[in-house]
Amino acid sequence: VLLAESGGGLVQAGGSLRLSCVVSGRPFSTFAMGWFRQAPGKEREFVASVSRGAGQTEYADSVKGRFTITRDSDKNTVYLQMDNLQPEDTAAYYCAGAQTSYSTTTYSNHRSYDFWGQGTQVTVSS
Image 1 (cartoon, helix red, strand yellow):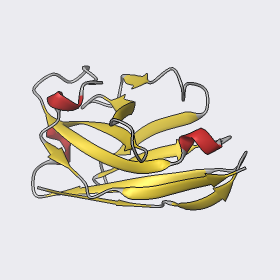
Image 2 (image 1 turned 180 degrees about the horizontal axis):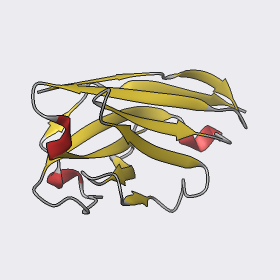
Image 3 (image 1 turned 120 degrees about the vertical axis):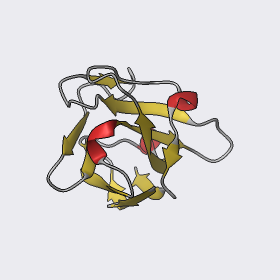
């Protein structure tokens, strides 16, 4: 299974970015998907998750109201729309897939995920 992220970059505070993650190798519909981030010197942090059936989403408190996770089954892709970015959002962002039989479950624990992408860097300047 391959997860390939894209869309990171440098943006000023208050700006927006959209991250994409394309999944290949197994049916996309069998995965709940998540986004995590890790800043230098800090632990990996949950950002958002979407259920296999796309009906449920979950967000970290730090990004609620600013970030939106969606998935497109036709494109085998999960997105993270990030608005009103702040310097504290600077990190490497990773998408992850959790193979599950539950269609409405989201996962915030990184141990629930089976596959990970290589990461894409997001840098927010003040």
